Image 1: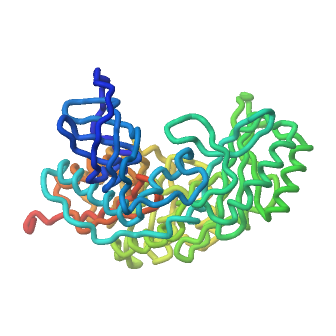
Image 2 (image 1 turned 60 degrees about the horizontal axis):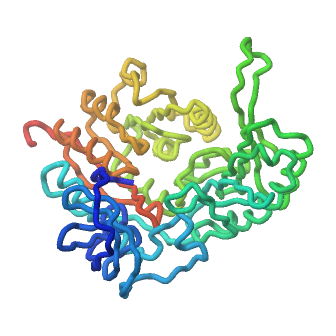
Image 3 (image 1 turned 30 degrees about the vertical axis):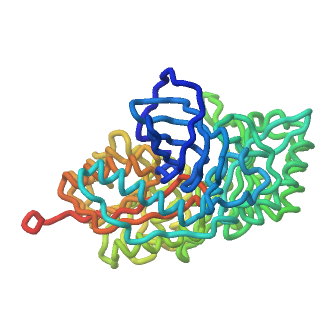
Length: 455
């Protein structure tokens, strides 16, 4: 989440104040203006009148908590989930989807206008999906209660676990797997060794990953094989491992397939068949991901002579569709296992024009051979920390076109400032509402290097 200030503790009068919410900030918090402060309040939305209690103060900014909603907004949605108010998975489900998306866009515009010191234009596109049953990947934590284990999500702003039997944001196939998984984990001899469970509802079968701290026994393996058959799933475990051929017997971890074939676990990215593992990172919202891919390819305007660099490529979500156009593309990521999987996928798909390299893009990488090669365009999809070093590298190379995908508008605004100062222009930008009902938002920005004669 983006935070614009760091609140500091200050002695405040512990007395509820009546406020009326007028706006939402980029984090989905209600904004209300009182006589003394501008209040930022979780759970408040435009149109609400409520009593709030001030928690933290910095200058004229106050963070507050609702004590009572006096008059709810006419737009406030009724809970559609029995876990509303406790589960932290979709804390903004009370806000209509369009209102929430509009607030994200306005928040981005304010942030970028302030960072760039100029008015930031309206987006060219806003990609959305249904707000329910959209999530095809998730991770469940495991907790014991009176000797019985269950799957759950973290409670909002807490380490406590909320038991989940069904989630309105998850796909039907993942929801159908929750109860069988609850039953099987309680039968395991090694249930005390369980970490968490991850699921991927792929375009093939369901993928399920168990993270454990000790090697799985033969008995427990048989139990997981049984539930895999019942759910028609591919199941793997990540467990401690010592390579018998290694000179030093250092314990690492490995992912081992318990049941099913990885040939049955795959994601289709604009027609490219990308095999994955139960542990693989995939974009959770399939419909928005497809729209995002089409948008990025449209920005790149590729042909068979194009040379493209895909930074932070993962298993090749962008790289593979780029290669399918006939363009030459190099994908780079720090995770060697993902790069290995990407290479295998490219080979199987006959995409010989797609190459993959391992590199830490936050450390020294500029002298590697792939980094010295010329490129017509670059796609980069960094993590929440942004892509400062990669951005400076691309500026130095004077790459003509850069497409930045970002899940953190604050980091994206900093990288954008570097590019603008170096002579790049934002050709267009937009948002992808990858996680409806939350404050998360993805951005896509297209940058074009300006000719000094015309800039």
